[in-house]
Amino acid sequence: MLVLGRKPGEYVMIGKDIMVKVVKSDDGHLRLGIDAPKSTNIIRGEIYEEQLNNRQRNQSIDISQRVL
Image 1: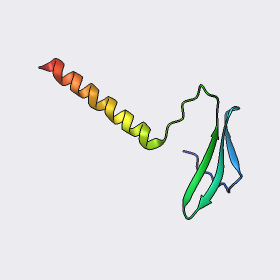
Image 2: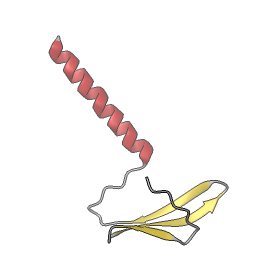
Image 3: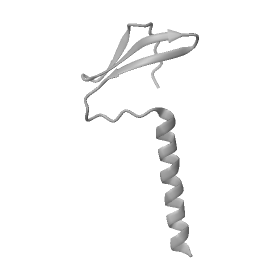
Image 4: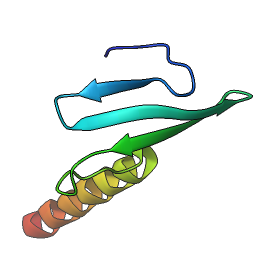
């Protein structure tokens, strides 16, 4: 994992077409702006983890039903 320090108004580029910009920083809270192609899925971490857990739970249910 790459860890960078950025101030409001500064940004990083991911490849040629994704820009992540620090829009605001207050009291330990950070706001990011992400400029990426529409074809790029952008999902908040907690939503991604929830979807992943749901998929894993569904797969384990499917497997247990087949065993019975």
